[in-house]
Image (cartoon, rainbow, N blue to C red):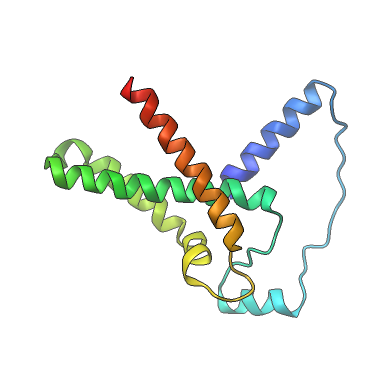
Length: 139
């Protein structure tokens, strides 16, 4: 969530400073209906929101998961536990904290899950970022 919030807050601030947008604050009702209460009672997140908020979040989680898998694979192949152990632990922690999003992407089958189209678009975005990074560091 913090990645999405920070990105949109920065964009809002830049647009405000450039005079492209007037700041407006409209309080909204955060109380949900019975269905939202049901997810809250079960301890599950409800991912039925705009793709504008979901795609950056799911892309970052997909990117972190791919980096963890790639890092663990590299450590196992090169046997370099001493130099990469802290990175693997940090990546594992980030993926563990992102488990509700991973669960919403891959495991849940109810209405509150991350839509398949969002998961696919976010995976493509993560793949483009990984490929770009690979090309930059290759050359």
